[in-house]
Length: 332
Picture 1 (spheres, rainbow, N blue to C red):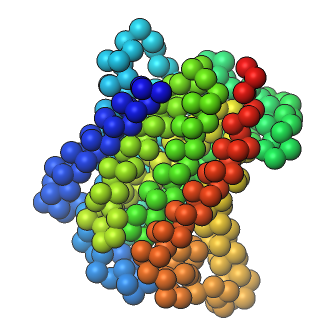
Picture 2 (cartoon, one colour):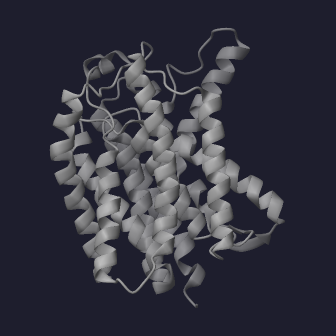
Picture 3 (cartoon, one colour):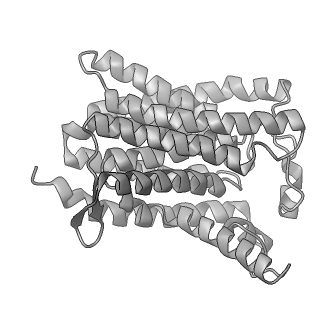
């Protein structure tokens, strides 16, 4: 338990310090956010706000590992590094997207097909790596029902790749208001941390990574809470998405993302329904906007209200998910 607290504190401190120096640097280099024309009117003042802020909690994750290595040099901590590697690859894809936006001077980066191919390759590589390390079984644990369904290796690989790509993009889609993605993700990573503490030391590497990300997110919120001084950008949102889904698969409970990531799911579904209805009706809108948080903003919700309501719902989902998952290995 002491190591969890140390890693959390080190990551939080590293994130705060990184943000203090990084934000002025990003402003000087004109690494700033360009706002899409179809965004809510209240987003107009955000034009020119520094982006690439995801490096703040990425620095927290790196500092957390360094602290972990110093504390316990005898262990390999390969699981920590595996999840970080997946997150870093997705963060790198997001970085390319952000960099393209900066160079073009508009809020359009990589094409959808370019991102999908890169994301799919990262997902398949991670699953194959975890299988080779013996960290993952081709079985599905079903929350609520508490049953495990064995499936074939090829089917599991396809399922896992789809879930990883979908989850990363769902987290990215949630990043659209000050503090929103970070606030929604914090209860998720704290839930994973709590689960690993209950499950025992065999899962400590996963839990310590989750603790590091939790500390980094809180440090990031010092700068991203409304009014935001920096945005995480696709760099940060995809890194967080990779962290969330990477931890879920490392714990071998990917379906826990359904209750735990309810906000992510609702954001994606609202976007899918909006676009589908718009195309089917040749221009009619079923909501005031999409994804869900933009529709609510156009309905009069402030960014404060969005943050606290969405984070609160995510926290409730985290408690439910913990109750579902914690007893699974209580008798190991």
